Amino acid sequence: MASRTICRSAVLGSLALTLVAGPAHAVDGRPAAAEPAVPAELPAPDTAGLGRLLRTALTQGAPGAMARIDDHRTVYDDHAVVYKATEGVADRGTAEAMNTADRFRIGSVTKTFSAVVLLQLAAEGRLKLDTSVNHYLPGLLPDDRITVRHVLSHRSGLYDYTDDMFAETVPGFEAVRTKVFTYRELVARSLKHPLTHAPGAVYAYSNTNFVVAGLLSEKLAGHSVRTEYENRIIKPLRLTDTFYVHPDTKIPGRHAHGYLTPDDTKAALVDATDQTVSWAQSAGALISSTHDLNTFLSALLGGRLLPAAQLAEMERWIPAGTAQAYGLGLRRRDLSCGVSVYGHTGAVQGFYTYAFTSKDGRRSLAALVNTSNNGAVQVTMLGTLESAFCGKQTKVRSAAPLPRPDAENDLAR
Image 1 (cartoon, rainbow, N blue to C red):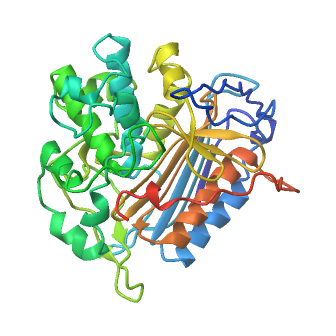
Image 2: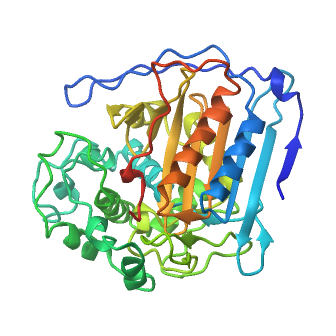
């Protein structure tokens, strides 16, 4: 049974959210990925279409699905308009229904948090983006040309160690479910392979980059990444559902269970909820909720977490696949209606997350299904961005087809 709640401080159909297009910046002397022209207003969300997508995800194998849209300004006042939708169950064992208050593992959305920490350190003068990583962590990497910027934009050439780790989905997961790694052990797994390309040459998503980001954060700040997340993001924004519990295995409080789909789709789903996520850490171990993710991204794009100069660095886009670009720990997706949205995707065993906001941070969407390793579900959930930001369309522009999610969006392939 579907559960939907609409909290209105104004009529959804009358929302008018102004978007400001940002300039494209050259990256390493090369043209950046230009942003498309932006409509003056966002249309009202297609809430019926959003509900259909969540129900479709259930028919494709997800036990549960949910989404939350926050509009942080209306034409009448400053109160948010919230739309919530849920389908299916959070726990297959108890049949407890999915609830948008449930916490869950956010996978690679963690990367945006990690990038914010390093960019705040840059604003404080403790870090320079175009300085070699080896300047701060001597001898860590095999090439002194790899800069902090290369790491945060996935252009280092560092091999993604999770390609080996999860070559077989369920056996790979069970082998690391309760293990505790150091950052340097994970980097060493990557360095068993040569660089995939020269530093700065091309975009190639690799979790190794954000393991290096965690090492940089701890070295330069002098505290654990948990402390940095808490002091710089979680506490200032009052994110009461956001936690970094590594190496503990439990999600605190009310939460959705996550179910991993085996490579043999006829095999039973695996409850992957409890795990250390030590194989990811600063690349993907945070826990959050739809409310907190919307709050975080709205604050980030709204300029509340970074000075203007550092936010501009974060938005120096490079092409990263069909209708999308990547900055520094931040992904841009260009939708069929001409709107661009900003955030990240996340996949950790048992969970797919889409968390994106508008250019000014005034409309945000967080959507989740509690399964992973299911390509059909992943594509379906990508459609939630169209429903949330493009609304009902009588004609979709052929110039901007719905982008396909790339395998690189997965932490656990």
